[in-house]
Amino acid sequence: MRVLVTGGAGFIGSNLVDALMEQGHQVTVVDDLSVGQRANIAHHLASERFRLVRGSILDRDVLEPLIRQCDLLFHLAAVVGVKYIVEDPRHGILVNVRGTENVLELAARHTVRTVIASSSEVYGKSTAVPLREENDRLLGPTTASRWSYAESKAIDEYIALAYAREGLPVTIVRYFNAYGPRLDPRGYGSVIARFITQATRGEPLTVYDDGEQTRCFTYVADTVQGTILAGTVEQAAGQVLNIGADREVSINELATLVKELAGSSSQITHVSSSTAFGPNFEETRRRVPDVARAREVLGFVARTPLEDGLQRTLDWFREHKPDDINTTERFS
Ligand SMILES: NC(=O)c1ccc[n+]([C@@H]2O[C@H](COP(=O)([O-])OP(=O)(O)OC[C@H]3O[C@@H](n4cnc5c(N)ncnc54)[C@H](O)[C@@H]3O)[C@@H](O)[C@H]2O)c1
Image 1 (tube, helix red, strand yellow):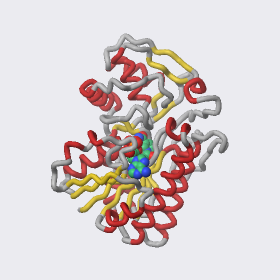
Image 2: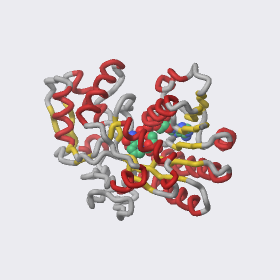
Image 3: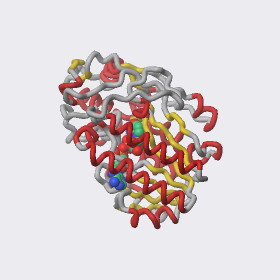
Image 4: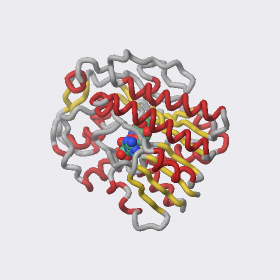
């Protein structure tokens, strides 16, 4: 198939590209390289089946021929991560809403099978775990700008579902904290990147608040597998699906695990999230997906044990030594 991946130079996108290339597809990436890196996909540049287009999803002239010429579209390009959203909410909203609107409008014009990357953030502060796709959402006030990311992703979902009603075969995947090789310390779920970096440098592992907030960390190979199934299983069209592991881990447990796996003598310390993110910051307490629908519709289960995934991530970080990581920066 001719597959287009927006945001394909990013963390999840580049891992998705690896899997698609391995399956023998013809793959085009469109990415403005604002966060994504050429190095993430450099190993494919010599292949005749691969093409990188440096461009923005805000530019319809760039998108139109690419979408017209593809059979399957994975839309991952977005402004991602609390740090970016809190620093420049207007840009995040613009890219995440207008960019997605562009992608969906062109996909509908050419009736291209499409997968849209959404996020567990759309559930907001809801603690009605496990979070089912139909659950109510609970978001904070508009003055807390982190929620603009959740809102922009939710608007993307509304637009996608509206196009689905008009006949576009589109699936929405809500990712739960992906991690693994190429994890960008500035991005989403980067608490793992931060802990790994701190542990390998012998610096204190900084846990926000009491550390009893939980997440379900999903190894990126599993995230990618769920994404490809969402784009290829026919019954997935028109559906919203949680894509994540359902092992609930507190940030305290995660810190201990990373420290052990790294054989590190680092201390584990607690700092206030408002010191890191500012006084208006709101933390979400629990994030656990209900994985039943993904299992039913896609036959998808995230199988990689956290310990194995963390070990592989640790190995990757050791090999690539991203020395420029500032672990005191304001990222989550
Ligand atoms: N990583 C996670 O755990 C997670 C969780 C929930 C949702 N998501 C969603 O998954 C997708 C991929 O996330 P990721 O973690 O790989 O993030 P990422 O930042 O590594 O990837 C996003 C990519 O989009 C590109 N991009 C940004 N603005 C663009 C624009 N205007 N035009 C073209 N490209 C642009 C960036 O350069 C980057 O390569 C995003 O849609 C994100 O919202 C990720």
